[in-house]
Length: 216
Length: 188
Image (tube, rainbow over all chains, first blue to last red; front, side):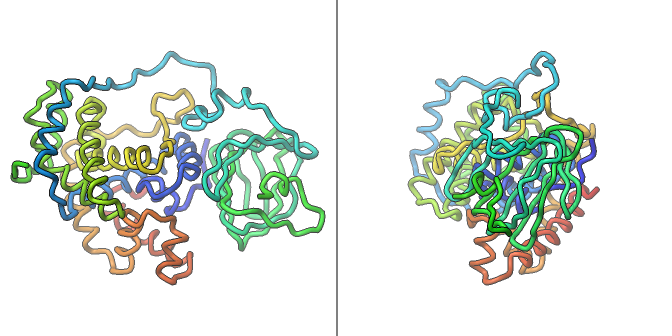
């Protein structure tokens, strides 16, 4: 598996610095499980965080802070490093996504929403929402653009639009400048994890199925 | 609080390892003296009030005591690891959100190259190189990096606050990361 489409540095840094919301970290963290080169980048960013922490002006703690912390130490049980679990059958949804589904992709109860398209909402925080979308081979969701940014991570299958082809692990970022009409590849169902921070805008008066998906 | 001289970085790593190996309370005291005021300073920079920042700094140090066995000096320095502990606790306790992240023991996890055997020795050099590279960023790049860590805002809000197009913020960030990664030797 070669991943060709990666999140921009701003999304990796939002995840590494902690400024990004849970919605951003869910999709970036799931991409990271599949993408060693992006994990190297995030590790460098966390190292920046460590350097900034090391160089920051200290703020004096109160006189009793240390002694009250020391008094609690004996009551705290130490965490043990996690052991590798027994080998499992092949898994499509990596952590952290699997915890949000409470299982693998086959556990998802899909909500049909149009010809060949179904979805399942996973998370909503402030203005952003994350959902799983499943499309049948050859199915599309209509031509649309975005008021905000949309991140789409392919979990299985693939899709193609004017910007390229996207397969497992690839992450597409679309902005208001991009008008696209993604079509599912012919080799099977495509499941994606998608995040938007604003409603989509459809280019025809006949609102596509995504209108129902992301019509806020 | 007793004032302690700041131990050198390698010594800070050893202090975390001492806690993991022998629950060494003296090592905790030294780590607390060094890091608790810095974590508090970091949280205040993020806009947290002094009282809440103090509580969270204390909680972070208690989490360090609890999680010390998970610290791997071949993967990160004590400063980097403690930064991630403080970051995650802030998300949990102040923002009341989960922190979704990958799990290296997950069956769907795609492994990369493990840290090299000499990574441990290189780590201290790396941190020194990183500090130099951070200091050498252009003022525009440094501003974006600082705000990325301390403004607690998405890049779109950072662009709006600086009155810059989003693309300008992204390209400054990209250029800064190239320089940082060159210093760390992590460019592909």
